[in-house]
Figure 1 (spheres, one colour):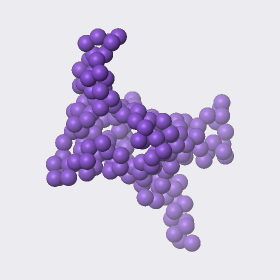
Figure 2: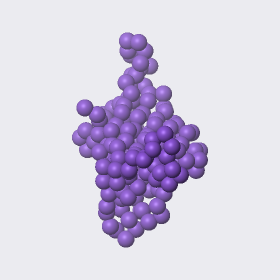
Figure 3: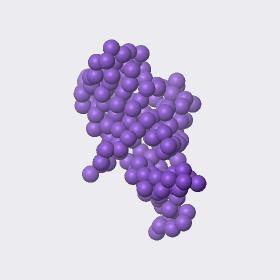
Length: 177
């Protein structure tokens, strides 16, 4: 019984800070908001760091030292993520990019959407892509351990990484101002 009370207490104190969208879903059923909407949560990418298998830590080679991205969680259990390397060169002819330019863009971009599930006990949010920039991501399961540090959401990815030399990728997100 004591463990159940602790779990309930932690859920009421912790979930609203981790994923206010989920907290709003629970409140929404008890206290209707005007217009019947729960508050969505958007995060803006701050940085990406890769830890290689040899222990070296560096900015992501795929997304460069100045990546941009958004991570959005909706109260209906759906999410979207997109990340791009902002240092990639512009196409010489925007109306007719070369095959090499298209490949370079594909290799420096990621985007997917689908359902998500929050497991507060293990501090993991799992993404279930239904639509993605690459077919291999569709239907996959992408567990993302996370932690909160003030206004920042820090996600660690060890699954779905393109480069086999990367042991883990740490993505730092913050609430847009």
